[in-house]
Length: 305
Image (cartoon, rainbow, N blue to C red; front, side, top):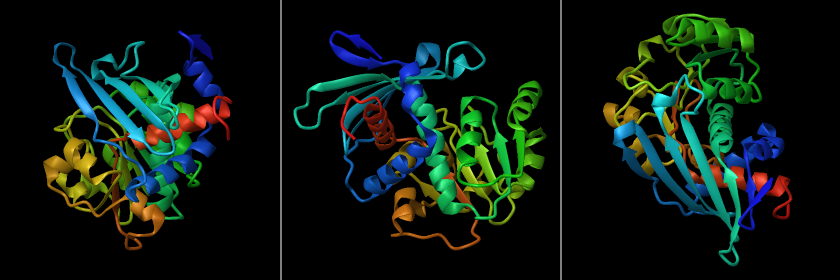
């Protein structure tokens, strides 16, 4: 941890040292429940396009158990380079006084809270005896999702697909899985993750077996899609009705109906029929970042437990 102009600054190394996935999953579950219950105040993210460079800048403030704002850039063109596609900073304030509390590098926070939210959704929606996981994508989120989802289900097989066969084989070797085609990976899967920068669907609903659960987390703008209309015809669960309706290309392109927010499912105020095929269409939201940052500050000793 370093100090910058008197303000504590936690770089990525400092965040990594204290942010634990087993603690993060229940923390984001509580944040999702609080959001759906109206206990978190957050506007929908404000997104500016950096048209000259094919990127986006988003502002994501929230007030809940803490007070903070995340600024995040998304540059899909950075894929394959040494520069991450997602980079972020988060500024936290003291709720009682409004005084700045700490500045955090939030790239890892974004990475880990995304997969933690998918793990929460998988625990709530996937079959308890799910044994086969399919990962479509080979980037940071693909790796992090394997780690997070293995904490809520016991997978005997992991199937990996990527546009680059070499990257897919490399990831499969790393996680103890097997590289295959997208269709073959999905047809046998109980749980599917789409974590790509696709702008056209790479997952066909016709491939999904009855009762499968999908975590769709890739995002490249409000008009881009990972899932086709067939996939989106199933039971759709989201983080935020308003945010997903505005930002999800899967939802906007298909015209699918939202069944529930995941916070409602976790709280027990909404339910999903046993054996239903479910789609968790995740676009991320500030309440999740606030929960993760609050956990980091507590574990780092900046705020009391």
